[in-house]
Image (cartoon, rainbow, N blue to C red; front, side, top):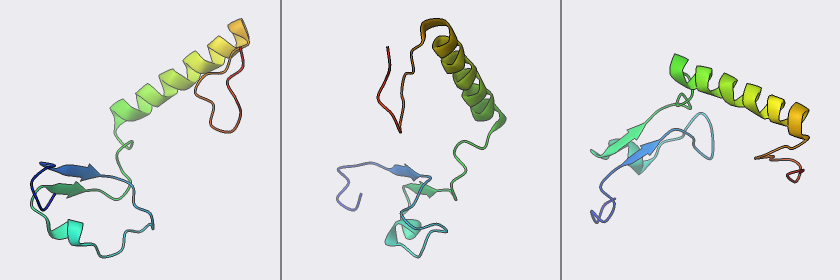
Length: 74
């Protein structure tokens, strides 16, 4: 960011929450939010649709996609 190789950054999640002081917070081309990226109505509706689609896929096909804590099952 300082060199200009990357034009800007949007940061929503930090290693430690709440976020601690960081030099990023003073940079002109950085937008930082307190873990709110998925807190819009549109985002929540999209998550609900994705969950419903994944449940339907599992019930119809017996498949789980994008599993985090288990391998995909087909």
